[in-house]
Amino acid sequence: TQVFKIAAIPGDGIGKEVLPEGLKVLAAASERFGLELEITQFDWASCDYYQQTGDMMPPDWKAQLAGMDAIYFGAVGWPATVPDHVSLWGSLLKFRREFDQYINLRPVRLFEGVPCPLAGRKPGDIDFFVVRENTEGEYTNLGGIMFPGTEREMVIQESVFTRHGTDRVLRYAFELAKARKQQHLTVATKSNGIAISMPWWDGRADAMHAEYPEVTVDKQHIDILTARFVLQPNRFDVVVASNLFGDILSDLGPACTGTIGLAPSGNLNPDRKFPSLFEPVHGSAPDIAGQGIANPIAMIWSGAMMLAFLAAGAKVPACYGQAHDAILSAIEEVLRSGPRTRDLGGEAGTAEVGDAIAALVRG
Ligand code: NAD
Ligand code: IPM
Ligand code: MN
Image 1 (cartoon, rainbow, N blue to C red):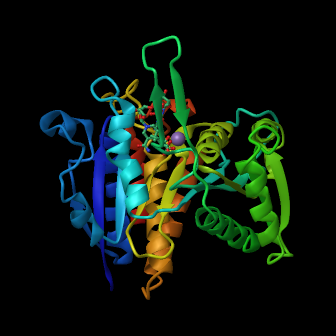
Image 2 (image 1 turned 30 degrees about the vertical axis):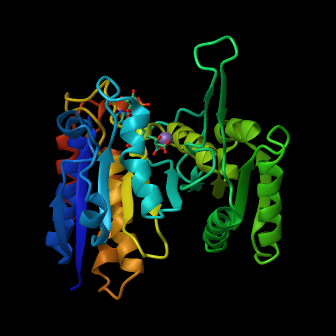
């Protein structure tokens, strides 16, 4: 079997509690299906490391990670000690940019057994992907504060949308939509108010649509789109969005399916020149950190996504695909009738849920 090298980075807060559960499940899958994962853990990319060294990561972080096949990442951020923009631009956002992880793939699914906060929705009604642009857009450090501390204080923060960056995320989204049953793509923009970049985004989507006649396209302003996530979630299949809009939609979507504690993500470099990064959508949750009550399922599902991505890009035995499916079935089973954490109305701890899923995966 092919050996895959995985960097495991817990980060901060509940990242340190959910990552071990993810690793537990990967170990169970390796045992059962004969996967060969060589896992190396790193304690940097954390606010603890920052407090010790004054930096989020060692100077050679890129060399240490570049040879990895994937990065399995918990969460970063501890605003009590390090400002969020410092910790995040010093770690996660650096990974996304320097490893050109230009797709952030975020599935949203309502599972059987999970109470839906939206009235009358059942599993199957909510099952879509948010495809988020992940390297440019509204996330920039271009700009500055002029006349600071005066009445004339003025802040400028630019957004950047390149044709290259926009077309590649649209292409990915069209391809994904084409491969799905509904073949429907929603383009999240704001072409009434944001009068330069957003009509341009719509234009890029229209131009590409000509190559995908089988896909139906619906361009929606982000404001009404958020309303429809709540009121008509069944209408969505693949939603493509800029960096910031995609960020917002990928917390709202999972909230509509019960909890953000389930939501996984893949920060993908589809060209496979660099390692891709798999992490929960949620953050370090300082409000519940240290109590052992965080939901580990987002982390565990992210691990399954990692196996599927690795398998798709290499000549590997079917066992990686089988391991992905087994982890997903185990998650479904536990959500139906197993222990659940407090965000799902249960009383179980993080490790109890991880143990239950690992046991089912082991078979
Ligand atoms: P958050 O996602 O950490 O928490 C939001 C709320 O959801 C909290 O009430 C938290 O308790 C709850 N929650 C989150 N994950 C949960 C889980 N697995 N189980 C149960 N409940 C869960 O968002 P925030 O409070 O805005 O951010 C906290 C810190 O995390 C900040 O430093 C922020 O910058 C950082 N952050 C990091 C990432 C990342 O590393 N990818 C993502 C989002 C936020
Ligand atoms: C996410 C997070 C990050 C983002 C933050 C922590 C910078 O919210 O992964 O969704 O905005 O991308
Ligand atoms: Mn987010």
